[in-house]
Image 1: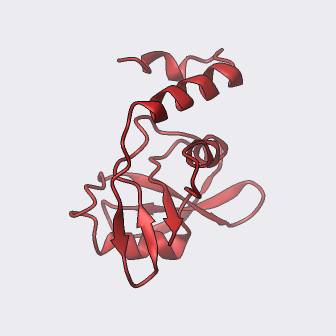
Image 2: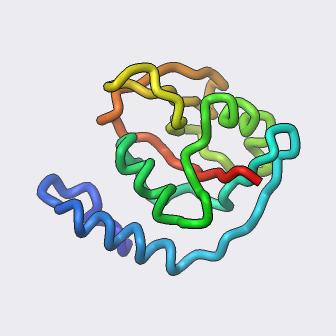
Image 3: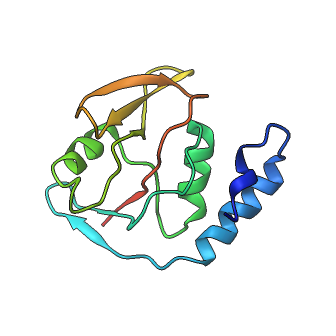
Length: 129
C-alpha cells in the first residue's frame, strides 16, 4: 500500500506530514451525526495506528474543526459502533490522564483505560456541530 513504509523507524516527521496530507486529499467526508452529544464522526479511521501526538496531528490536518474525540464522545460512539464501522481495537481519546498518558477506548470490550502516549492506537476524528 501507499503508506506501507509509514512505520519505518527512521522516517522523518516531514514525510509523515506529507503522507497524512496526501491521504486527506484522496478521501471524501461523509457526515454522521450522533445527536446526544452534537458532534459529527468522520466516515473512516486513519489507515494506520498512530501515537497520541501523531493522532492529534492527523485529526487537525483534516481541517474544518476535526479533532480527537473526548473520552465521553468515544463512549457515545460505542452505542453506534456498528453503524460507524468501528474496528475492534483501541482508539485514542483527547482526554489526558497525565503528561505521559491519555485515555483509550476498546471497541472490543467496551471498556476504557489509559495508555502511554507512545503506544499506537486507531484514530477516528470527530468535530463539534
